[in-house]
Length: 346
Image (tube, rainbow, N blue to C red):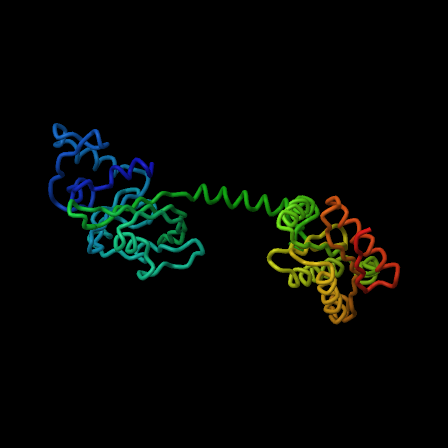
C-alpha cells in the first residue's frame, strides 16, 4: 500500500493539492496526468480528481496533507479513526505532533523541534517512522508514519503527504512473540537465562571467540549447603536467596557476558574475552561480596558459595571447559567451600 501511494502522492510538477471533495483541501484544478507514469491521462482529467479523492477519503489508512506553512489541508476518515480527531476540528490548524498525541517508540511525546514531519518538509526527504498515537479517550495506537514531501516544478517543497498505517495488531504479535521467547529462555524464579538458553548460547559463544582468537572463560558456582537454608528458613526464604544470588551475579557481569541458572542452586557465567586469571579474580570478588551480606530472609545470617573457573582452549571440545569448571567447583566444595578454584587444561 505504501509503495502505491508514493506514486499517487508525488507531485510530478503539480504545485497544488486536490480540490475539496469530502476532504479538507486547497481550491484549484489538477493538471493533466499521465497513465504511463501511473497517473491519469488528459482525456480522463475531468474524472481524475474524483477518483483520487474517493480513494483517499475511503482509505482505511490515515491520509493527511500539510502545506509548506504546516497548515493541515487534508484529513481523511482513516486519520479521524486513528487519531480520534474529526476533520472539522483539525481543519486549517497548524500541524504539531501534540495535536494527535504523537509519541516515539518509548512513549515519550514528540516535540515540534524533533517532529519528523517538519524534518521531512525542511529537508525534502521521505521518512518512515514507527510511532504511537495517544487518542483523546486514553487509547494508544501503534502506527507506521510515512512522510512524502510534495515538490513543485521548480524543485520547491510545497508541503507533504502523510500516510498513517495502523500496525497495532503487528505490534501486539511482536510483543507476544517476545513474551514467548522470554519464557522459553528465562528462568522464571531468578529472571536470568535458563539452562536451555545457556546450552544454546554456549557453543556459539565458544565458536565466536575461536574465530576472533580471543580468550573466554566459564565460572560455575553453587550456593553452599543450600538444603539447610530451605530446611531452616523455609522454601520462600530459599527462593529469595536464589534471587539475591542471581542479582549479585548479574551485577558483576558485563553486557557481553551471559549469566544463567544451571539448575537448583547452581549458576554459570560465560565470561567474554576473559582469561583464566581474570575470571578467577572476578569470581573471588563475587564470593567476597556475598559473604559480606547479612540477609533478612536468613534472619541476618550469611550466605556463601563455591566457585570453579576454567578457560577454553582451542584444541579442546566445546564441553571441555564446562567439565573442567565443574571439576574445579567440586574441588572447592571438597576443600571446605566458600572459595574459588581454577583449573587449567589437562
